Image (cartoon, rainbow, N blue to C red; front, side):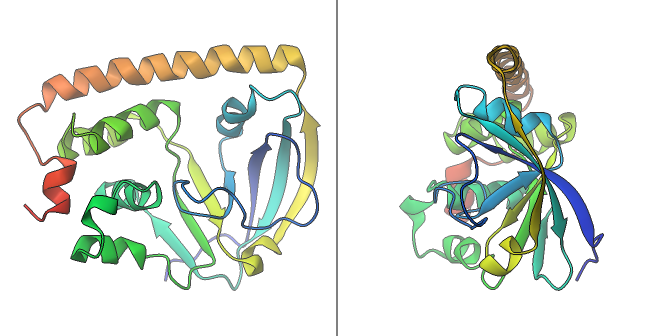
Length: 213
């Protein structure tokens, strides 16, 4: 198993603040399933919470020692794990590939993998909707500088997270972040269009991969 730096500093954005103990209680259909999400890029969670007046930003210290960690490299398996957790594989339930990804995170305390940021989110949706191939997806991953996200899946992992700082976002901060988020999304749409044209006839589409073709 890959070794990791024992203590890392990460960031978490909350729509209304953390109340009580940190727990793996995000909504189910997140990138890596139900958990507590943190990232290496401070800006990324800020763009997710900028529409909420009570939003708070947290700087965290996380102790990774003695945790079972799955490290997902940015690639097709990473995208397919996201597809499973976002409910995009339900049409192939109980297939070999579905069962592979449904069991992939069993017994894991923490998953580390690339963040599907505003730009990548657009590309992933196009892949899941059959508009671009896996080659287009993989080439877009190499073109974008994606931050990394850490997802605590168990209470054991959550107990190793400490809050170092809590920041309340001003209305001016949130307005600037909204503009930046929209600019990132627009850039992602433009990039996805270029990739779609370049790789129109190369690679496999999502439904083909799910059917083993």
